Each structure stands twice: as C-alpha cells, then as structure tokens.
Image (cartoon, rainbow, N blue to C red; front, side):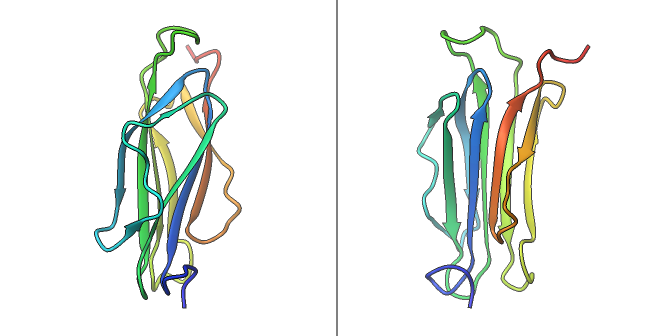
Length: 138
C-alpha cells in the first residue's frame, strides 16, 4: 500500500518565508482525483519568517500531485517596492513511480529570489525556504 491512511499516496509542500516581504497565495492545484488535505486558504497572506504546509491525498491505490503559487506583495512595514516575483511549487508522487517523482520550486524573477531545498527526501514531500538575493545582482 501507499503512504497515506487512504491506501494511496499523499503529497505535501511546505514553504518558509525568508523574504523581507509578505507572500500572498495566488494559485493552488491538485489532480482531479485528489482530495485537499489541507488546501491553501483563499488569498492567504504568509508573513515574514512564517511557514505553511498544504497537501492532497491521492485516494485508494492512486498517486498524488499538489502545487501552489505565491506572489510577493508590498508591506508598509517592510522595505517598499519589492521586485516583482511569484514562486511556483509542486510535488508529485506517481502511484507506480517507485518513489518521489517530482518536487520543484521555481520563481519568475531568479535575479532577485531563490528557493532553498529543505526537503528530507521523504516521498511525496517538498520543503522549501523562499529567499531574497541581497543586494540584487547588477
């Protein structure tokens, strides 16, 4: 059987906001056969130095996939006018894949931001610290 209590695979993504700005949830996704466990609250704002985990359960004898998008937003208490950027994260664990089949973190502004992989190597689990390159190159 799989890793989940439902007889299938479970996928999770954890992020830690290591930016001097807040992040706002801008998208989330899962396979249509998955069940949220839990999903990302609508337009959730992740403060500096906070973390959040979201995930999906694949169902009986099924794999899973979960994703999320987080956009940098201005915070009146932080440095103003952050460089624009969105982080996109995904974890996929195929049922017949023999293990973790994909954990990714990318962003739309790699000149200003980066993802640090904090994953433990557990199947179906991605863990990332989202950080700012300071000073920006150039």
